[in-house]
Image (cartoon, rainbow, N blue to C red):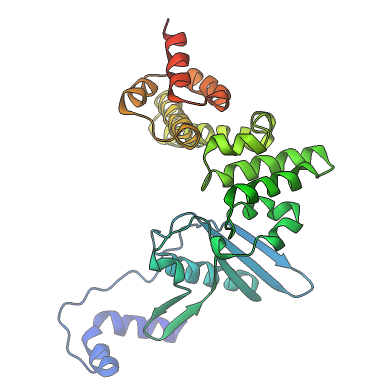
Length: 300
């Protein structure tokens, strides 16, 4: 420690000397940075430990290739943190879900001077659907796989879902299938093959609805600890309403397509309770007219 402290002092007091010695260059625009490196928490999509193989499988799912920070840097960051904590072999796989011509979905490594980090890339729309049709947990992904007849593939997936014997499992897989299929199929086509009742009844769907509300409440509570309980709770309720609003608009967009600005303005005026009610009934909507009728009903 004595040596460390001595050398740290020398580097901080005489950085030009070390730069000249190690980089063979002169520099005057020098800034001494904090030695405590940023370690903000980050959350991976999936991390599974294979005990027998002493290996970790790390998965990231990307709808779009754009990412902040860029995906290659994120994958390196994930790897370093996982390896630091578990010190074992790590297999990283990025699965892109939505077809795109972006060159970013072909990038499978991070490269900088003296550093190269590789990971696997899967563009799901290029994959053979047959292996995905063999396992219940992969059926939702099968709707996004390679096919010359998307409607036939969706029907085939729906048949496989209907053959799942355990009812709770069937319902969960059905919901996941409908949500993922929404990336490439129109809602009307999905409803032809999969039960929309599963969405409303499923625990997964309820978790999605609750997620935005809970996030807003939590942020409000945290702010309340700093700014005063009453003010924090008020902010939490408003943030909860805004989170619920964003979630409802996202679900409506997936259900009906783009929502015109007039309807979006009316949605902005809804209370948290009204947004929660809308989240429960919007699965029955088939057009913007249904949404308009529902809004007219609550306003009368």
